[in-house]
Image (cartoon, rainbow, N blue to C red):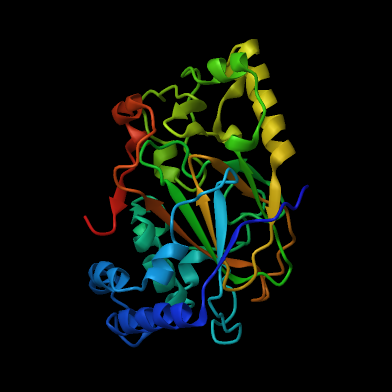
Length: 332
């Protein structure tokens, strides 16, 4: 797999200091102990704190500005000992790494509006992504031994994020996140036209058990469409019933998949790195690895961000039922 140079935006020491100090201040407002960390009290204070951050931080968080559709923010310190062992399941993380939850919320708020899902990780605005026993072969962030297939985050839902934000706390094994931008593929006009028609649904993934039991008719959605600034996509082959498509559609989809594979790059995050992915341009995944479950495994934090008034998605998405799932905006 190619390892193209990923755009890096380096935070200067003074910007790191103000960001982490703001996070410490916010965290102290949520209570001193794990059992009384009150996120409902902390969340409303984040916008004011984010608004007070310097122009340097805001410039670092400017929109994606290359065809690659992603960038890495670098410079945030992580104390490997202080964060404690990698949890074996997202639900057992408690307050571990909570400072970095708040840092991610601050960065996400500068970029847009963080969202949570009622049906995923108890509606939290920052998720813990860790390998979990019994989930090794799933197509979710808890897997390990299988390739996590490239996909649009929450592709099944019309309210999916515009930006995916992944913060690395631990990655001793240099496990790579994969990424591929639709702006870098080569497809002929006929394939683009065919894949721009709503032919097949995208079903909810295994992280949304309640959505998978939804009884409404799955809506057919386009894979590609033209936004004002170029081609965009909505793609999740692991949860798209491709066998229901016409031979022509399957062939065009296969050619898109081959192109995304061709332009795919591997990004091995190091502690303190924050990967920002444009979810309308880039599909992401993860290479297989063998989890040890000894407290040293890969540990990421994940936030999802909507960008208010961002144009470009098909108007028909407004009529989709979203399989009964509701996205909650942090500051609504």
